[in-house]
Length: 322
Image 1 (cartoon, rainbow, N blue to C red):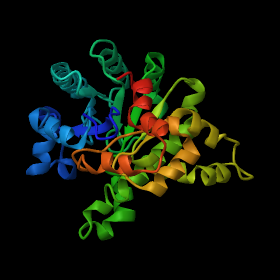
Image 2 (image 1 turned 90 degrees about the vertical axis):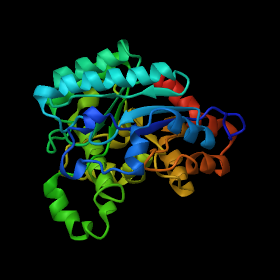
Image 3 (image 1 turned 180 degrees about the horizontal axis):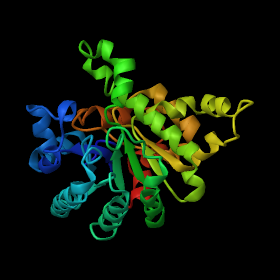
Image 4 (image 1 turned 90 degrees about the horizontal axis):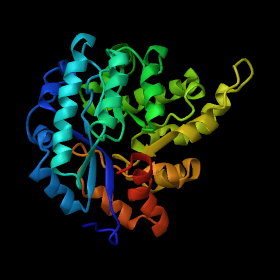
């Protein structure tokens, strides 16, 4: 099926919209109609046809942002259970084409940890994806959320930290001046990266990896700039007056990154040099990014076949068990 010399191609940040989850989206998070929404809601023939045309063998499906992170604690667990059960049914109908990251009701951390365990043990999911700030204000490194990470480490599954719209105060102070002319500035062009890179740095500083040394985190979009910046971050955090921290070492040992929506030769070279090829996984970011450009880029990328195989499928098979 693959266009890449017969190699299996697994794309691991591929989004969909569960309508009952989407019903909880409000304001700027609410998805407009049209072709994008149609592609988000399509978990059948149209999506598989697009995969076949691009040479993608499997997608690891995840609820689109902001998923359940802005759903209130009193209803989030019930919404999560229904959404994850429906996603399981999709994967069961197409076991060779779809796998899944679970959606977690992080407003209730205990329920989120329990739902993570249920989706992994009972539904066969690969881990979970968390989208941005819980309740629009809370970073996931706060200790009240650590039960989620404790359970992920015990289950030996990763948590994928995906962007969502930044904190409103940050948006107002840094982004709103240009948001009307360039709405992408608030999201994929910069706001998403700024919010998620900050979350990744905070995870390292929080001490959660000392507490749970088996914890694994995935960041999309070539690591949200952190592979490019981690030498300077490490240097800056260890200047006189700072509490010592092995930022570079911790990040390099616990984080994995994906190619989602970022098909750049120089960026890939930098990430290989900083992270190692064993920590890079292929992703497209469908349907926000079309399927075809990702595999076509990997096909022409100047890497040896062994490294391409790791990125296209081997690392995902090892990390996610797909």
